[in-house]
Image 1 (cartoon, rainbow, N blue to C red):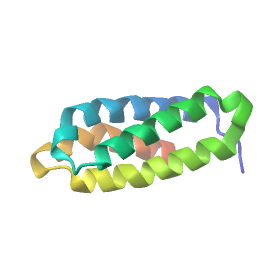
Image 2: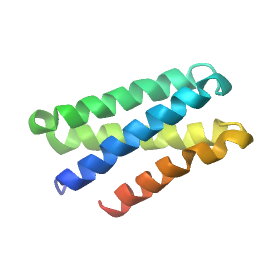
Image 3: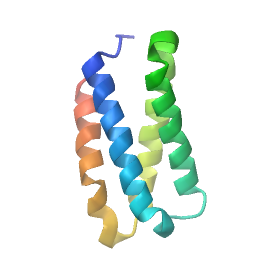
Image 4: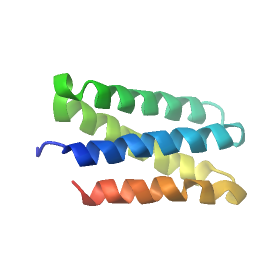
Length: 100
């Protein structure tokens, strides 16, 4: 597996930060448990980024992969009037996808 370059890790960090911001704004409109699950995955991904020098690609890839699935679910479960709040996260996610 190709190593995750610093720029890609920065993109993931930005995505995590943006997703945390969105989550705080819409958590009350999401199904119970989903916001908590997403929050935990965001923390797990942050930890994988912080410990990247030690744990490397595998741990980060796994965290990002789980996070991506959870974000897809969260976006679908977000009330229609707040869907656009995810736009920046989607943009960050697509730039990360194209970088791998």
